[in-house]
Length: 479
Image 1 (cartoon, one colour):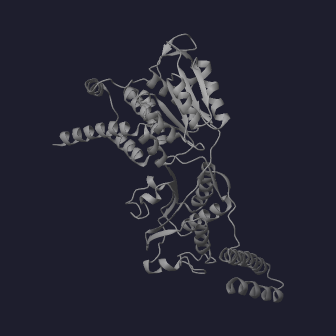
Image 2 (image 1 turned 90 degrees about the vertical axis):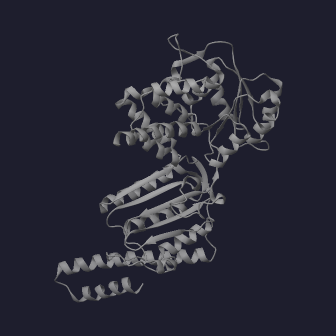
Image 3 (image 1 turned 180 degrees about the vertical axis):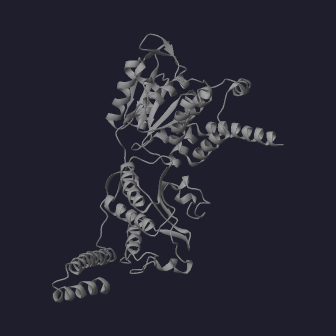
C-alpha cells in the first residue's frame, strides 16, 4: 500500500509547487489517477479476503448456462492475448452439461484471476484454457492422483501458459497473501489475486493445484462438482433430413416415451406421432415398467434422471425378464457424465442420446433398431444410413476392402479426437472433408453414423483398423 500512497502524496506536493510546466502537471495527474485506482483495488482485495476468511462470504448458487459462460470468458481472454500478440487456445474436452447450479460471480472471478495471470506473465507463446470432465484428461498430462476414479465425475478447469514460470521452491508461497511473482515487466500486482482465488476454490469444495518450470511456464487447475439441472428437451437439426420424412413403410410401430417433465414428452410425441407411430406416455420409471408389461412395444425412449425409479433402474428391472431382453431402450438425458453413460450401457441401454436432441440422429437410431424404411415428402422411400451395418464378418471384410478411406494424417487426427472424447469435432471434421474427398464418402458416412449414435467402441475400432493398415502400407513402401 505504501507504493501507490507514496506516489499520490509525492506528486500532490510537486503539483502544489509547480504551476507552469503543463507536461509535468499532466504526467502527475496520470500517476495520481493510476496510483489511486491501484490503491482502491488493493483495499477492495484486502476487504474481500477478510470477508472470505471471516466466513461471511456465502456462495450464491443459481442456474448457470455453462457453454455460454465459458465462451464469454474465452472471448475476454482471447482479446487480451491478441493485445500481447500471443496465442490463445480454448478447448472443451468431450461433452459438458448445458445447465448446472453454481455461483456464476465467484467462478468467473476465480477463472479470470488465473487466466489474467497467465496472460500477464506470458510474453511469447500461448495460453491454453481447457475444460472437461476429469475422465477426459490424460493422467500423464498432470498427475495420476488428480485423475483418480474418485474425481472422474468432476469438471476440471485447466489453465496452461508458456510464461516466465515459478521457481519450484516458491510454489508453496504463491497462495500466501501479498506474495508477488517477479516478472520481467514492471507490472505491479496486489499480491492477493491467487490467495483470493484459492479461498474461493476452497469455498466451492476444491483446491487450486499448480505445476511450474522456471522459464518454461505454469499450469494451474482445479476440479469442481456441479449439480446438473434438467433442461427442456431442445432439439437441433443439421439438415433437411428430418423435414423430408413423412412416414415409414410397413406395420405401425408402438413407442413408449418416458419423462417426468411434460414438455419433454410433448416434444417427442409431437414429432413422432405425425410420422405414424403409436405413442404411449409415462411420467415415471415405475409407470414405464407397468406399461411395458401391459403393451407390446417396439421401442422405449427413457429419461435418465427421474424421482424414485430412474432410467437405469427401470432398464435393470426390465432386462431381468426374458421377454424384454431384445426390446430397444434408448436413454435421452441432459447428463453428459461419463459414469452415467457407462452405467446405462452396463444395465442394458441400447443407446444414450444427449440433449439437445437431434431429430436426424433419433430417426437414424429408429431405422437401425426397428429396421425401418422412410417415406419422404415426394412419395419415395429412402434410408438415412448411407452405409448400413454389415450382417456378417465376411461381409464386413468385403465392404472394408472396397472402401476408399482417408489419408493417414486425417485418420490420425480423428483418432486423437476420439481418444479425447470430442465427438462433435469428429463429426465436424468429417463433414468438412466430404466436400474435398467425395471418393471417400461411404467411409466417412460410416464414421458419422457411428459417431452420431455414440457407438464409441465400433468407431474406435474402425479408425484403429484403417490407421494400422495405413501405417503398415507406409512402412512397406519405405523398405
